[in-house]
Amino acid sequence: MELGVYTFAELRADPASGNAVDPAQRLRDLMEEIELADQVGLDVFGVGEHHRPDFAVSVPGRRPRRGGGRVPKRIRLTSAVTVLSSDDPVRVFQDFATVDLLSGGRAEIMAGRGSFIESFPLFGYDLADYDELFAEKLALLLDCASPSA
Amino acid sequence: MVGRAPRTDRRPRRLPAAGAGAAAGLGRCGRQPGVGDPGGHDSACRWRWRSSAASPSASRRSSSCYREAAAEAGHDPLPPVSINSHAYVAETSERAADEFFPRVLGDDERDRPRARLVGRSGAPTSTRCVRSAAHSLVGSPQDVIEKILYQHELFGHQRFLAQISVGTLPHEQVLRAIELFGDRGRPGDPKGARILDHVTIRARTAQPRRRSTRPCVQTLGIELTRTRASSAPEWGDFALAAASAEKPVTWRLHIGFAAPSRAHVDEFWQAGTAAGYPDDGAPGLRPEYSDDYYGAFLLDPDGNSAEARHSRLAARLERSSITSDPRHRPRSLDALLRDRRPGRGLPPSDASSQTGRSSPASAARSRSSAAVSRPSTCTSRSPRPRTEVVDRFHRDATAAGYCDNGPPGERTNLPPGLLRRVRPRSRRQQHRGREPQPLACRIRVLMRTCVRVTRGDDPARRPRRVLRVGRAARRPVACAAVR
Image (cartoon, rainbow over all chains, first blue to last red; front, top):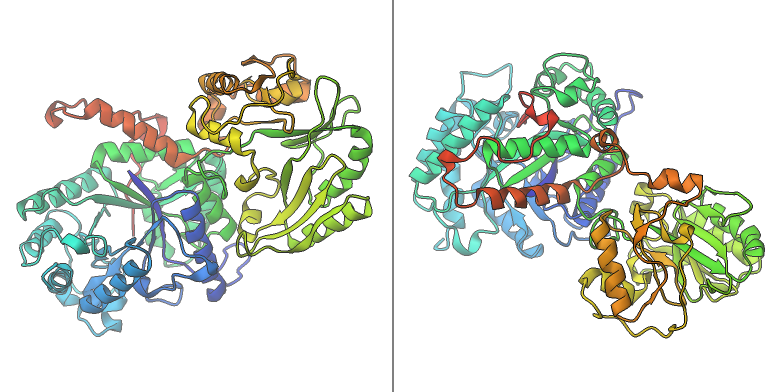
């Protein structure tokens, strides 16, 4: 069984002290977490996406990979998840294909519909089309990924 | 990728939860053109299902639906399944609960759905949350192992992902939990577990060195752990002892001490040079080793080289690890231990006259130990506390030309302080995970055992409980609660 870690890079204030978390520091910490997970032999590191002020990452496929000065050497990099329904499948494929090439074939997409729904109004989608959006966009993403595309 | 029901107060209509409806949706998508083996693009695009139901039976239903839909759509083999869950692991169940739940169960209005996910009843910070039903995978390494194995019994998934940094856990705690999840031990250890159990250096005269070495080592914040006048001074895993006719001087050994900061490295070097140790490399960055490698080097009168080294990431994890740098291990012993084959990588020893038992202090920190020696080092290694490993180490090394310096066996005549350290842990202590355990490694061992048991069996006739599942996981469940 593969074992891994995933995160949304939350930014909620420390409940004890009330101190806010600096987003830049949070992303530096995230790079350190990826590096450590790679070093200790975990198989996968995933980054999710939320589109709210209390989360520091919103674009898992486009996040910087070279943070901390080192590129992870073994660990697979995945989204957890890519909210495909409110994204552009062609762009998603291009972004992940780039990361895949840069990382030596270790990028993967975890395509989902999203349990947090703030991305639907943000990108101009109607939540009433929840099922249809996912079906249509998944088909397009699969088309992009098929060898004949 | 089966959808989880969106959480919102503005939900326009009831959306299908994970389960039959979602699986039907997936089946619909699965029949679209372009589905199938993505071929060369497989590594770029792989889709996984994530479970979201709050109870194991619902999650099991969802995973069954998913597999049925995938089979119906012509996927062969079936796509892998991943379980993604809130999880946190600390050295003990109590510590895990105390550190995790207050972060997750804050006063924030938005925390309420999350509170429902992680626990239904009871005080949120009690260990009941770790042990009881419908909670996240929070606990000691043993707790988490049992829950993951229990989930595997239910879902047969191929991947488990832990969401650790829920509620903005402090960075140090997240790193610690990731480290406990991993199976390669500390950074720098290539194989897992820790490499060295302890290191003893024998000097021509211990007392003068002791006086001057002590301030050097203590500039790094490493506390003296044994100070009795009759015994060698010890700093945790590292000890100095006087050489004698039977136990010769250690020479040309390199020891790297972990320094908590670059200022500590500077202070170490300044204290050492002030005490008269020859400079072997001034404090500074060594980018040829790694980007943030900051070290300083000293020599002792026997030609041993001592280094203080600071690495930002390593220092956060381990302030007093003294022997974690694999580049400076004795090469041939390391090769022997890695290969576990007689003679491989070992030069014949040139110390044919050296015999005699090692003292208990140098030979025994694990329950069983053995010692072989070359003139230059007194290191021993116990990656796993299994007696057959110790036996094989000694047998292979002596067969390859190393001198016997103490055969395998229990060392019972140890000083009281040492005896306390080697006494085997009670079952209860083991269960509560007093020491960092390589969790992933143990899970994989258990999984391999499981595969051997079940391979080729008829699934319908398979005994209900195949995996070794312990106390925590036998309770009604803790599984697959993702957002």
